[in-house]
Amino acid sequence: QSAAGRPGGAPAVRLTGRGAIVALLVLSFLGLTVSDGLGWGMFANGTFVVACILIACYVKPSDLLPVTVCPPLAFFVGCVCDKLITSTGGTAAAEGTLVTLANSAPWLFLGTAVTILIGLRRGLLDNIRDLRRGLRGEPDGPLPPRGRRAAGSGSGGPGDPLGRGSDGPAWRR
Image 1 (cartoon, helix red, strand yellow):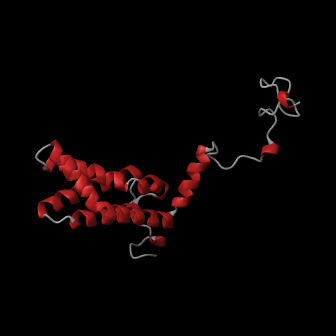
Image 2 (cartoon, rainbow, N blue to C red):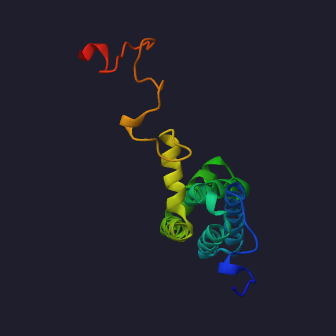
């Protein structure tokens, strides 16, 4: 058992994917707001990276995929909200947003990379496999091989609307 009293070191609290994304957005916004007040931009960047680590560790394994792709967008939305609140006008807010994003770019890459690395250790590849299976129309697993289709599954016959007989489509005959 782990120090938290759970087998395998699983955290006691689990976030849904949406909850983790909202937490990242709020923490990014608060980090940016406090950073503006302190006049120290590193605070916002550090807050973002720590928030990325926390959400990657505490999100449910089934929700890892959306959480690993959202950190830059969450920071952007938090930054726009912060600049709209703290700037004197629309042009100043746009300029402040662009400057902040440019200065924070390496930290955005770091936070996203750390989120992906933690996600990979927690089962992100399983999420990707499930997504690919679902996109192929195989939500419960792979389809049987093509030559072993069940009877009446569109493989031809007297009532086949595509005109396929047992030896393939009519245009091939």
